[in-house]
Length: 420
Ligand code: EPZ
Image (cartoon, rainbow, N blue to C red; front, side, top):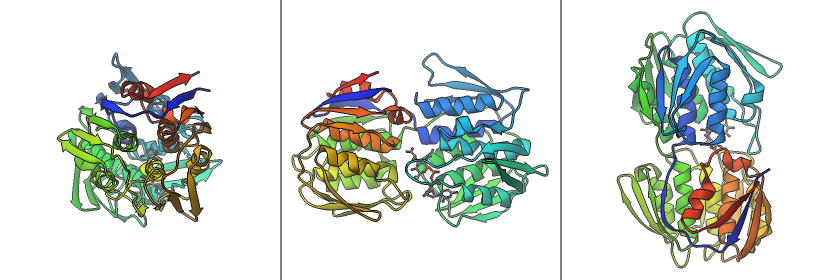
């Protein structure tokens, strides 16, 4: 298994360009199952989860043609349509559940594996299933698979999500696109990646309108037209590089991301002392000489502070000049990085879902273990500001969601090597 060797401390300086968003690309790729005609998706990140989703689409009968740099795909429907989404593919990437909505909406049948949990939580899909059921899906769960059918087309209806869920919102929007009549979804998640999904579907002729802050109205159409769509930049990768600059007294220009979509994070970074200038698709960020502590950060649904940046900000707060706390309110077990940060010298106390960081801690390089995608990148950030060498094991977690991160980090001054 690959590992990273990082020799710190380093300062990041220069320019980095952000790859396409994994969490926008995954639902967009799943929704190509709705199409009869070919569809072109551009600016895909070259990360493992995208490969897994493309393999899942192939297993369902889609034909995939890659461009030279593999960032653009042309997806064709074939005659060998299949409706079985296997556990072997879905277990490695929970977003596999997003093929259920398009399959039931287009083909009125599907056998999709339950995704199973992951390290950060049980990750149930009850909100997905209850919403699709309201649209007319009948299902029963047998041996870990969702056996789903519908009597002809799904029927538009009114749905209010009892809890805000990114995936359940995406699955429902995709399924309602070809349903009969009007669907109104209330209490939707409104992450930018979901807006990217609805922009993509609208570019193919879907009738989708955001009629309230968290209310989406979809009027079903008979079919979708061919389209070419470029996926938005990755919001979490952008936030991660911003933290890298803030952590290392760095000076970074981050390109290919719309700064309007991470105002909450940029405001927090300014409160920690970073100097930030933004243009249309660019962020210039300078790290402070002294990082100011922020006494309490809460992860919440968009547009609040995202859970996917919680681990990265924890590293920043370990180096701040005072005590701070972060409360994780989205997932039940998303502090796996804390034990690893303590090995570097971090002083963090956890009580329930709240972590309190003593600031002004010196980190010394050590051997570390990755646990989940975002925790792994937090370990990379911590190793970058540690004195001496760190080894980060099991970086396949990182490869799921960050495109060639070591190349990007090397270019901005980080002493990092991948050991296979
Ligand atoms: C998406 O996961 C993202 N994944 C996650 O990013 C992200 O952390 C999460 O949204 C929150 O922003 C993708 O977009 C592929 P949810 P998702 O449904 O859709 C519970 C990463 O690192 N819940 O908003 O699974 C759930 O357990 C990943 O890229 C139910 O109880 O998130 C969680 O506690 C990690 N029942 C909370 O709701 C359900 O049916 C929010 O989950 C669905 C969710």
